[in-house]
Amino acid sequence: MSVTQLQCPPYAFSGKYYHVSDDGRCTRQDSFFQGRAVLSQGVGYSVILGFGVFFAVFTSFLGYWVSAIAARPSSTHKGYLLGGLVWFAVPFSLATSLGLGALALDLPITESEASHGLVPPATAIALMGKGGSILLLTMLFMAVTSAGSSELIAVSSLCTYDIYRTYINPNARGKQILKVSRIVVLGFGCFMGLLAVILNKAGVSLGWMYLAMGVFIGSAVLPIALMLLWRKANAIGAILGTLIGCCLGITTWLSVAKIEYGRVNLDTTGRDAPMLAGNLVSILTGGVVHAVCSILWPQNYDWGTTKQITMVEKDRTKLPLDEFKEEKLTQARAWIIKWGVSFTAVIVILWPILTLPAGEFNIGYFTFWAVIAIAWGTIGSAVIIALPLIESWETIQIVFFGMFTNDRLMEKVEEMNFKLQTIMSAIPEAEQIYLLEKEKAKKKEVSEEEA
Image 1 (spheres, helix red, strand yellow):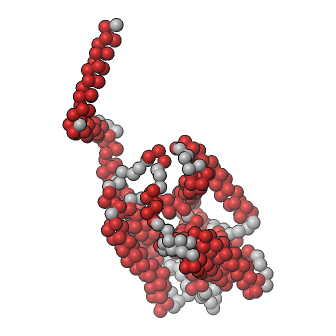
Image 2: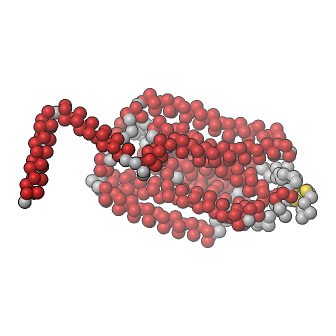
Image 3: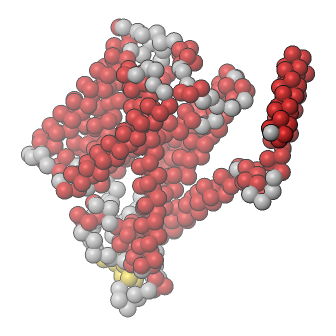
């Protein structure tokens, strides 16, 4: 069956889905979803998924924090918001195209295979053959290596600077820092690989792990947020809130699974009710414990001490002083609050509410949904490809022309000469010493030639 035989777009939201028979006719097939909504209990599931993704980004993906600190202050807030909008196109477009494509093509995918993330490659291969598998593998490889490398660097930075250099060896120099960083990268990389093998052998699916993240790490979200935004935040309270919230979240998660389904295993713990209860208890307990400790024993942290952090090897940035002006940072804060809250309200609240009147998606509404997914994915691709080239075009030109000419080098030499002349004119003694040393060098050169 070729792709051109798809005479009617499939949709799975009406409780039934359409598929194409061998002779190309579009027929209706009753399925597991007969008489029920595919998105039943969608609110609870969206809360679990939203919490899990937010918790993961906020707590465990240290690469985001490292990138935010390393980025130019005036560009960080806009870059992260734009990056979030572009990133959203990836799961949204892939789920709409490859996920529903598997239903339309009636691919023989089992529940176990689907839970292990095999729906996208199955659809890609069915539509595009070997080329589809190569494209999907390339995309997956780039995503894994990008996320993995940033996480390795982030963990090594945390262990090296915040633990080793702060508590173990405060006088550590560049070579020692580099050595410890490499050891941490190697060790954490091996740990990630070993953990992935163990989870795979235990039968833990990607979906289960994706939803369970919030139970394990959600208790740290509010303590971290309070420590960044509240000067009274107590460090010990943050640690206690994280540990107590995690323990109570896991206890609630397993208890609800036992009470609701009579047993505790991967199947029951991965259902909506236990996951929702565990996520809520984890995040709320962590925040309450930390807030109570901070109110009773406020730490009153002085943020000015962060300016006293010493730099390794005196390696300081060359950002202009305007980047650190208080009014610019205040404007950036107001900008991100306005647009961040607005986009969050539209995507998380307004958009789902506007889909409720549609009820069962008819063919027109589903076409509209698919067009949005395609447009969002296309625009997102254009942005992430073109925008970096546009912003870095001047630097690219300098590098390119520098490969074939010495103009850039001569500009740097002239700039250096100008700086030296300015310094020497301001300090007459320096110019006299320079002339004396130059005369000595000439005499030495002449004597060596005569010898």
